[in-house]
Amino acid sequence: MKSKRTGKPVFFVVFILILALTYTAFFGIEDYYGDTRKVYLKGAEDIRWGIDISGGVEAVFSPDKEGVKITDDDMESAKAIIETRLVNQNITDYEVYTDAANHQIIVRFPWAADESNFDAQAAVQELGETALLSFCRNEDKNDVILSGSADIKRATAGVNENNAYVVYLEFTDAGTSKFAEATTALAASGGKISIWMDETEISAPTVKTAILNGNAYIDGMANAEEAKSLANKINAGSLPFALTVDDSKLQIVSPSLGSNALDVMLIAGAIAFGVIALLMLLRYRLHGLIAVFALLGQLAGSIACISGFFPKAASFTLTIPGIAGIILSIGVGVDCNVIAAERIRDEFKKGKTIDGAIDSGFRNSLSAIIDGNVTIVIVSLVLMGAFGTPDSFMAKIFSPLMSLFGASITGSIYSFGYTLLVGVIFNLIMGVLASKWMLKSISQFKFLRKPWLYGGKKNG
Image (tube, helix red, strand yellow):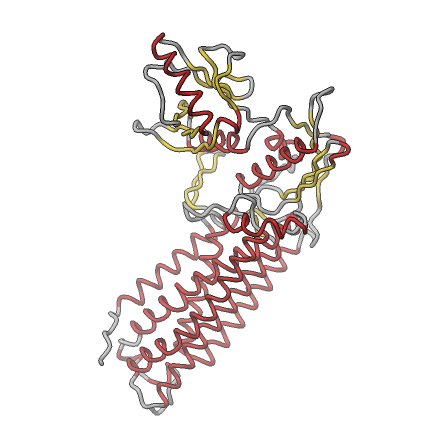
């Protein structure tokens, strides 16, 4: 059966898309209003590097109230809240330890991507804030209707029907019952429900109708960031005490590889990529050139997923194992292109035409490529589950086993699994689909319809 030819413009369309993704993934899109930087698309400079690469902060948190009985369960709850806040800020390379005997929590986490002042005190301030949300009758702070995680199930940032930024709240069954009873009474009397975050009143709407469905929202947010920050704090939970930082124990953690290690790794990676590109060109000619473009697109896609380039893909902390995951996925991408190129060469030996050899070569290589990549996807998901953030589905499955090994390995191995996973996904997109489209398209140009350019004999 004669295969359908791919139009000549397809090569240029795919090539331009790859170049556009590569440029924006590495350099982002931003603008400046005076000294204010507005980011439209995040680039490589927005990546938050792990402690092993850029260093970070070590802080000791303690309860700020004297005479309050602090149990081991309270300390474990405080630890869980700090971990949740770290994850909410997309910090996945962290270490959190509990010293129950001294009522202390030791936390280590890396600097932010744009950190320039290296102010350790400012870096840890938000992690120690309380986040007790309370609903009170009228504006009486002491007349509490509901509060805390026992009554409030989930908070989500969003926009309402008037396109105003709000935080949507979902109550627990107990909270729903309490809120329904209170709003029924207040609606009849024209009363208010005041909403408090810790000791600050953030809203006091008049109750017009009873709210029975267990949902409400907080309005008055100035922007999306403010709404997301409030939702994160509510989701993080609350404690009967605030956590304070012992400034005398605040330390700056030096990177384990040294300040120039990242530059060395980037240079080495660029050299390795160049050598691979040269070998692919020498061995596979035109197909080798297409493979280089596909590998570039794969690398750009991985960087984009790390930096938070895509709206639905949150940024996360990149560690040394994470860089190893990128390198390994590039190796898998090279293997993918090599398998396809060798199959095409085999088809030429059978006497196939250029179009027939390309079609049959990609078709015959697909099963081997899929098998290898699916295996790596499974391994990546297991790594992300076993060493991943506590609230992920896979992490909950593996948590009973991995809790035996402590939290110090969580971020680095998770980073490896994540970069390996996104690298393999983009390998399938670029190494299978994009490569095939570009090769079939470029083969339609008359001056390039020479079998030796695609792996056949030069006099073929």
